[in-house]
Amino acid sequence: MDNVVAPSGRWQGESLGGVAVFRGIPYARAERFGAPEPVAPQDGVCDATRRYAIAPQLPGRLENVMGRADLLDQSEDCLALTVTAPEDVELGSCPVLVWLHGGAYLAGSGQWNLYDADQLVRETRIVVVSVSYRLGALGYLRAPGVSAGNLGLRDQLAALRWVRAHIAEFGGDPERITVSGQSAGAQSVVALLGIAEARPLFAQAIVQSAPFGIGFQSHRHAERVGAMFLAELDADPFTAAVPELLAAQGRTVRRMAGPGALNSAPPFLPVADADPIPDERTWRQAVHDAAADLRVVLGCTAEEARAFYGGPHPVFGKVRRLPLVGERTTSAVQRLIGRKAFEDGLFRFADELTDAGATVYSYRVGQLHPANPYGACHCIDLPLLYGSGSTWATSPMLVPLVPPEIDALGVRTRRYWGEFVHTGEVGDTTWRPHRRGSRFAQQLP
Image 1 (cartoon, helix red, strand yellow):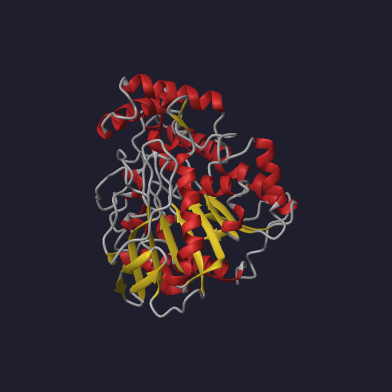
Image 2: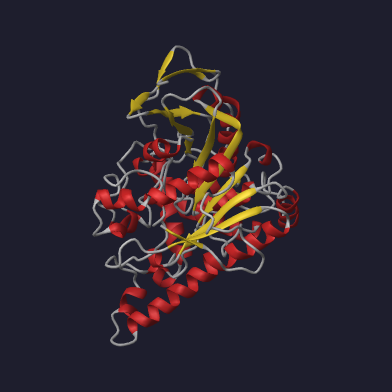
């Protein structure tokens, strides 16, 4: 199974303890600020054992919380995916999970070792496709005459089309595709639910920690960010070197964060009423109209904001050190921000989907170790699903857990995800589908 002949080419992957992994498969090509275009079939046998270059990016703002992925080359030629499948799978037989990474639309990659799916596939016998897409200004800039925005989202659509057309040769069933994502990737999944051309490409969805309180950008706000970026760049955006683009992007991010970096909303976001996202009213109606047979897992962590404000933050770090009231004050503000940015919108969306006929399973992830200062922060769900205990061993948000403990903590979550991808349901009868007005959420791990 580590040698696959598909319409896209002949791919030589590698066998890893019962799973076959095919890395760095290009699904599209794109010029700078251009739409993604399909790639021609590859000639000869293609090496799919090496990780592809990742989208140009600066270090992620949560690197001090999650830990650092293995370093990889960066390139504008970054539209690639990794397929991980059971080694003995029959063609077209296994349900498929398509994974869209997070990172505030500024960082991350489907090629990261933190998102390897070997363990998840080994335990659940699903096929996992991890997608990379364009980030930051190269993926989400909206500026007249330069880019209309949403290029990263269009990349994700192109990846879904590739999966639909080619996944059967890797053992995946193109009729049983679940699209999933975390943080920015989760917001992307939410966007895809209301895009008409996307809906035939997947049957189910998993939405992990989507920033519902931020939503999509308006044209006005996106173009304000775009103008700020172009002023910081002070060069032709079509010919400027990538380091220049990233430096201007970094300055734009810092300016948009404001005094004390209190504004944690990403400056580069999907834009409403810009291809492929329709205007908000049309988008909501499309979500409603396509929800009748939809099944969704929808959730967040119990303390999302601690990832952004729980470490050495320029304002919250000082407040936290105040005697008597410091810790209580920062905890209360973090809970409020987490509720407004993530949880309240999650349950509103669960109500909307349920009213439209969808089946929704809601969850909440709690802390993994009481001694860890980040608690149940944003991203704490990721090591429960992807990578392995050894991959996440140095993650600050997991200290003092050791690799076997990290692996053991994720067993139930991986089983739930596998059951849902296979059947659209969760086998645990204590995890009841959402009902309008309910705040019930299955506690994980």
